[in-house]
Image (cartoon, rainbow, N blue to C red; front, side):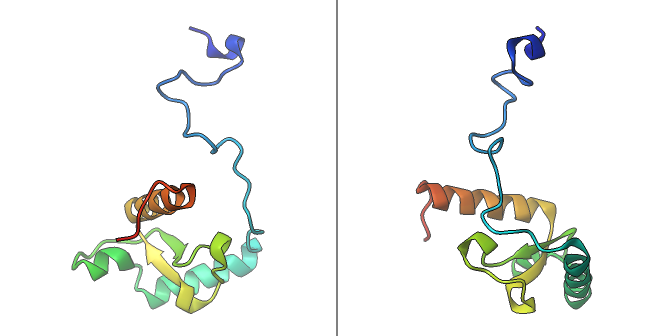
Length: 108
């Protein structure tokens, strides 16, 4: 089936979650050169290890820098609010935050 001719890029099974196509950051993204300096500093500080995994006693490489308190909730680009995180933990954290924001999750 040619989904483009139907005005869609994906079938129903593979379409993105609601809201992702309309995503616009609620807060401006940091400038790239400043953010790159911050990222390098956080990676070095955390020895390139995923901090959520480390807290569970697992050593795994971190590929991303995460805001512990999201910028959309007032989190800042301070070292205290940043952590090295692996892609899997980042996906899980982001999913949990989006569920909470939508009222579908609970903090227990």
